[in-house]
Amino acid sequence: MKPDIIFICVKNAGRSQMAAAFATAASRGTLLVASAGSNPATEIHSEVLAAMSEIGIDLSKQKPQSILQAAPDGARVAVTMGCGDTCPTLNAERRIEWDIEDPSGKPLFAVRAIRDHLKKKVEILLRELGYDFQ
Image 1 (tube, rainbow, N blue to C red):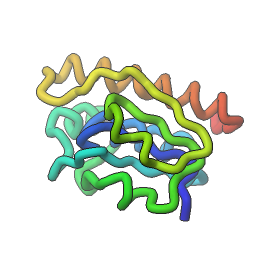
Image 2 (image 1 turned 90 degrees about the vertical axis):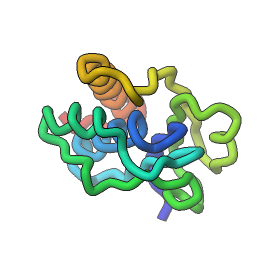
Image 3 (image 1 turned 90 degrees about the horizontal axis):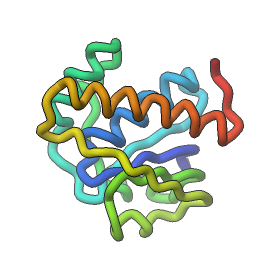
């Protein structure tokens, strides 16, 4: 099944995982949301797990995956975050590029700022797409 929204970054271990979690939470599970990496890591960054846990979102059971694994048939909307030339291989009706700093290896205070910025961007995106789950 084609995701409504897929969030893509390089490792699928930080930005895309956080964005997908925010979109899923905001839609209360009514949207099919996926996340993927152009070169997936083996696990989610520990600093991302910690920052998301602070706000009650547990990503510990999530695993990084490739774009093909997450959305073999493409997606309605693809949001890319720093994966460069490898992201355009995904079939999507609409593509959006976000310039979001990679949280990998950053101190927790910096990851919190990235997390909070992503949450706002996801909320704005959902409203722009016509979804208002408030």
